[in-house]
Length: 587
Image 1 (cartoon, one colour):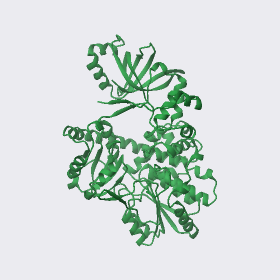
Image 2 (image 1 turned 135 degrees about the vertical axis):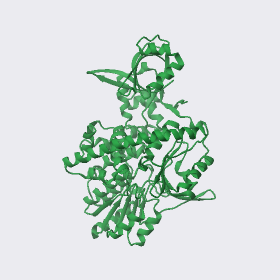
Image 3 (image 1 turned 180 degrees about the vertical axis):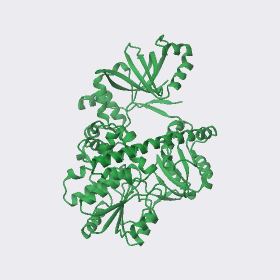
Image 4 (image 1 turned 30 degrees about the vertical axis):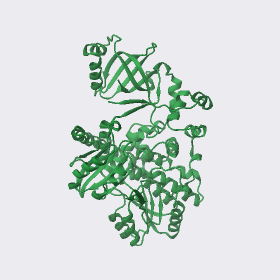
């Protein structure tokens, strides 16, 4: 059962609407996003690169740049070591390309998901030393690699860390002692003593900031560093960072520059997925293009995605883009099978009263664990860990709900974990197979989650009759983009809507199109994408099968009245534009 909750923030919506020439409904939605005051609203609506914070506020960034400039001047070999997900790939691309343009002798290495696991490890460090590397520069990893960095230092290498993950800590008598690696410079806004005001950058965002300082020191044009904005935008969306503050600006400005971007690889990936640069929104990056880049690190090697980004030849780029798109199609099939298996285990666990789901799928490809965990989290609204059998014990990924900090809860059982890291909402871990049952037992014993926490909340921005929807309002809603975590697509709600007719469409029968009417007489098309059989069964329970059968035959009797959570859209068909609503939830 869902709990529908209206977000009730207060402000002078009429006054704000007049001040910014927007509908008061739009002003209310912006206030619902915790944007308070005219200055913050101005930044939200019209923020651009001039409003980004000074990158020099990042702790150690000037030290890191000074070291890099010395190494470039001395002709020393620099190796960028990233990660195998979209953030690691884009971070690596930004740093390698920027350093090359500054005259550095630079190459890259990315850990293999299966052989190496996440982040810097001893094999990568030893390999760098054997290859005569003078300086390792990490991106999107390194903050939790104290032992590996100590090894690198003992081998005579200089090591610079750029990362955005949580700083590891040890807790004694309720007090936390943060454990930083002894690198030559550590650039991470999450450090307790880092004065940088925005803490939610992704790894590529941190890399972009470092390049800003590097280019400033070399007196390069700010326009040159802005060429990297699309890559920071892709990473910010793909790594599911909050699209607030600086991240919102990075994504807006990055997507805006896609059309004029000189990158045959990304343009080929767009064409392969039937997309034009000017129509790319955060959705397309998060659910179409990003997964293609991620698929390389999941099922093969992330170097393939990096090769696509660095390709200068159109024909080669198209071939690489086709390969990644095919790889992602295979990933989807494997994911569907894994979700099916996990759902069976999840149902058993929920019936047994478990609030934290620890599901062991030994034969599942470990790279799919995070995706499957996310799908199960959505269906059961519980924190979910998907564990798989790896070459060295059990590996897993977790996805959480807002009431449960995954990283902090793993810290409570770190005595049985070989390795772990992550954020409040997501985490990765390795442990011995014999400790899986103990992990499940202890996480459920320690959790403070209540039954109320496990009921999904549908947050409604504005309870708004469909009669209020106009083309101008729908067009103004685009001012709120990019949508994503922290800046979700707004939702509205209306009740006592008569369903006049309904029909199920689509090859997979996953679309239900309805004609609805408000209590004030306004009629409109309503479209639902999802489990249409479940919707129909729900209606039959409430209104009898006979009435619903008549409805789906186009013979509705005005006796079926429902409430919908919805988003308004303009539907264009055969050159004609009409208003319609997309149904998100119903009851």
